Length: 390
Ligand code: FAS
Ligand code: PHB
Image 1: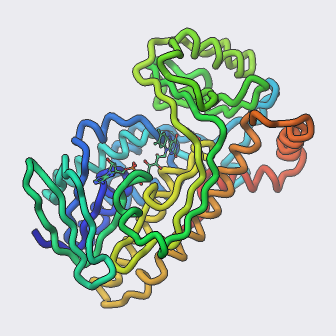
Image 2: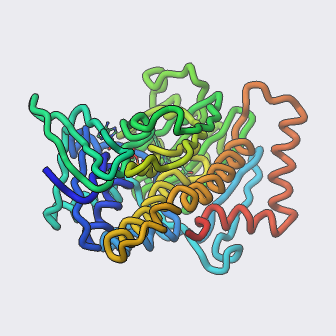
């Protein structure tokens, strides 16, 4: 097999890259280790930044998003049952976020790729990336016991935190930065009307909680749990009791306990690998960086990388210029680190840390009071939440 760009991973970043490159006339092959069904079965992000919506429009994959996505002009923070609504539109000169699940974004992109007839190899086992430092990188994979090789000009590793892409970069060529948080998020998805019309992030002495949604009839909730918790120890009833204990009373009363259709625990970490390039191998999305979901940045950051990488490949193939590809890592990392900061800050302010002393708790309260008292603090949060410009 031969192509121009091999993309490893059919998650949102790999699929969007394939869609944008395909529409620019650049050939790609996507190699995905899981089945289509497994990829579409993942429940992850729920909030799209304005820039992400524009990218999906550019990819010709935003029709259903505009039909079914919910536009949110505000978001709420709650501290000890006090509620603060941030009017995103007023604070950012009219920007908003769109609530539309990552699963649906992935489905729209996957269907568009299939309709275009561009190749995606599912269940591609043991993907190997070789000669990335040369001008003829090679990617191989196994399927039904047969090893196949793909000759290409470039490799885009969009294969997530546990993928093969970052591991294919020599250790001495990478520098990594990490913060692992001493708690996780237990998430529950249920077919029930959301407790509130907008998202509510709550800091409570019992721990963090988030009331989110996927639509007017599907709720998404999270509670902070310690790292030794197991999802099998959390019945739906126990989850809803804990969620209601942490939300402001009027919001708790509006929660409609319904059978979970998904329940899982996700660990929280901040992670960055620098640079996001090694020769002809480029890292994008979770393959290069992870943020705690508190800032709703993970998916959006991944698609922001794709924006920069697409510009680089298009300049290479259309104009014979590699200036954009050479600038990719620095451009992407400049935006990555701003989102890492915002996600770390939101996590630090909204969660109860096991080792928190009275002073640390006062600092969290002071951050909340600062948001209510100082308009520029609220503007800063809102600008980051709706998404910084590319
Ligand atoms: P992904 O991990 O989505 O996709 C990588 C793809 O590569 C996968 O399909 C995988 O099967 C494939 N792959 C991996 N290794 C491979 C190999 N060796 N060969 C071939 N294919 C391989 N973000 C938010 O903004 N809000 C949230 O609430 C949120 N919740 C999350 C909950 C969980 C449990 C997790 C894990 C992440 C969450 N995220 C959230 C972040 C998440 O949305 C990611 O940012 C997003 O999926 C990143 O997309 P990709 O970079 O495409 O990586
Ligand atoms: C979600 O709805 O899954 C969600 C929303 C906002 C976040 C994290 C998760 O910050």
